[in-house]
Image 1 (spheres, rainbow, N blue to C red):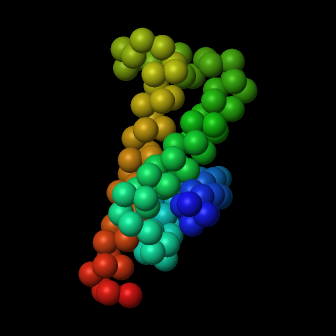
Image 2: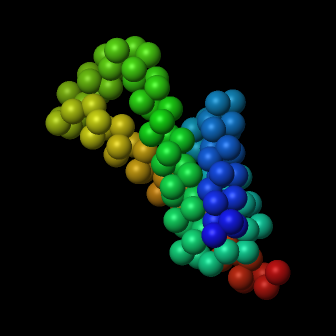
Length: 116
């Protein structure tokens, strides 16, 4: 349990820092390295990375959305014909968390292939 929490926190910190300074997708290689290093089962690595990334992206999206009075997210939701801005933020966070979860699983599977 401690190791899962540690992986979740490491993934969240790497996601936050890479998202702040690099392009949105740069968290994936870092999460893959964490998945390789963690020595957790594939399901635990997937769940830990998904939850860490989702929480960071959802929190930052809500923060930035509130900073501009939801103007941009409402317009994008209208263009994409999404019912409201929360669907947009949740869908985007879920998509990004799925990408990160696949990166972590790839790292864990690579560790199994190499037998480290």
